[in-house]
Image 1 (cartoon, rainbow over the protein chains, first blue to last red):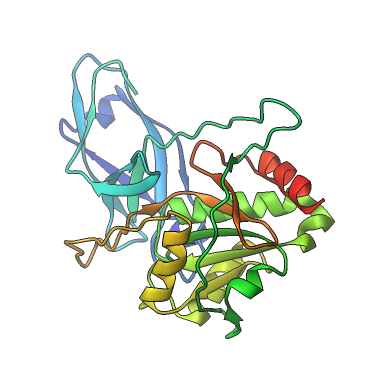
Image 2 (cartoon, chains in turn purple, brown; image 1 turned 90 degrees about the horizontal axis):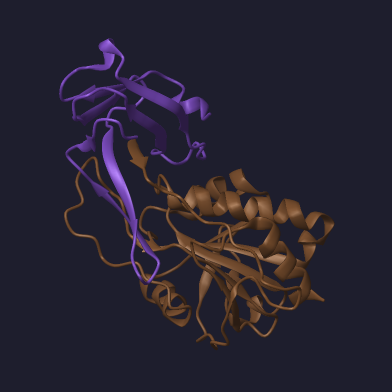
Length: 95
Length: 186
């Protein structure tokens, strides 16, 4: 884990159901980047084991001023793009 | 900091001992003029000194660039003492922000022999075009979002400075790349 980002990460759910434990965060990790770089990525698997669809609507960390939810896409020319999204759907029974 | 998900990359292997793992090409490069992070000139002649691995990116890339440079680091580890036979260049697509000193700090974090290259936008574009590498202009950059799209590939150039093999996102297995390098060098 990258020391520069070894802080706490909070995820924000639309239904706030984390306390009831139907939402589980599995294998979270941070990509180590050189200190000269000011950004990195956090990865995790989010499992919704409950009966109700939910959404990830935000992320916060204690070590970074800004944090956003992104998706990474790669087009037919192998151009990779990261796109900021407002939320990630967390369908019931899926991860 | 961003949260990224859904990035899965397949590791494929060469189908037989004779085939190359990378995608074969034969593109001639146009001459270009860049500078490495130590201030030395890098042009087509410099590429003919050794077999070259080359990729494009930028320092504040949170995802693809550190992943690519980690793959190159692991490729060097696979080569062991044979790593002296190749040179590895990371060409910035963000020359305004990626100064030579910052490029040095960035590339050597992954491996002490990696060299960052910079230059004018025109010269960077020249070699990118030769390698069919793209980095579309981004609109809408904000205080929190400086992300740049760019081709996610590693290029292997032979000692004639021709593009010989390309490694797209589904062909980034360090061991298989190292095997290709041994074939090309020998």
